[in-house]
Length: 191
Length: 227
Image 1 (tube, each protein chain N blue to C red):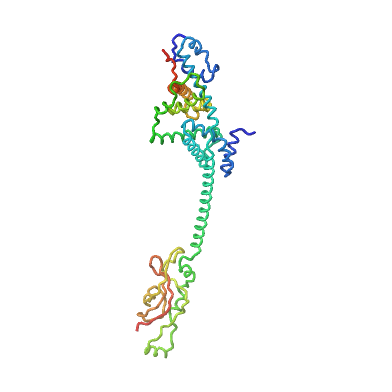
Image 2 (image 1 turned 90 degrees about the vertical axis):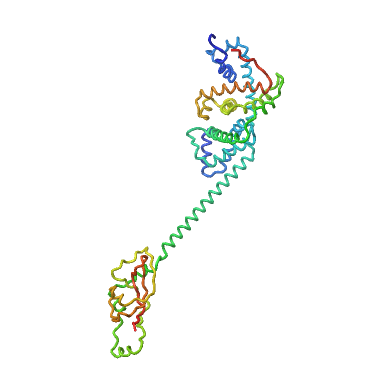
């Protein structure tokens, strides 16, 4: 059975030659990861849908830009998705700045300590959206997409140490935001 | 561990919460610090909770899929692109064919009559017979003085005759034919041998005029006398 990159390379070659079915197979193989990444980064189903469509339309027009020798199509599409997310974020900033207070009030103050992990997950999803983008993307990539530090560094285009330190910082911020969103308190470090 | 504070353990706490015991670096001394620091234990709890929430979120996100409308839209975009490519190709081919056909027509069409005419130009020496009317018999000359003689006709299908000492027409050069009355004196001056002695006489002729306005060849039609 051919490995993923070989299969993607073959499909892409067929697609470039005009095979519509090959594009359908490529789309079905990668749409979920692209959509998931966009959804976790934006927290908005409509925006994630738009970004997914943009990414694959881009692929239709620039299929020749992918070089199988340089990596897998999944990573390539993740990079394209990231670019589209940055572009969209730039556009969004002109219209509606994120209002953190409105999201914080959605959290259930006075939450019970034994609340299940599902509501923690919902709070975490909101908390991730409140992170600055450079922290949000490492959390999404390393903690939610389960990329290694090396893969994330390759995608973002920075050093592995930078990814690690951003992730540590992001998780510290997330823990604090989760406290605020769920109404729990933890003891402050005295040192 | 002497000289270490909680800030030194932040990274180790995160790694421990993310990957469990295998994320623990024994050299970091995190275990011994946790035994004495309630704040770091609390921080570790928060990180572990965060990791648990991330696992749930990851499982939820694993079910995320783009709506089917995206696939339909993309296939529509793909078909539209193909159609537009095909249309561009067809239009390109048609445009090329039309351009080629026009080029062939332009190339094959004689751009000026002179090209054909020049090919039929007779040498100057042959002209004398045409330009010089045959000498009439003596008796006829007397009659001619008393009545206006009809001009001696020249065969209409005579070829053009190159005017001496002018440049020949180039194949690409445009030219036109003008019918005009040419003084016989001008014909003589141009080097045409003629027996017409009346310098005031005129010859009706088709003159081939080149792009530069200069006469290049001439075809005589008829003569008219001055009186």
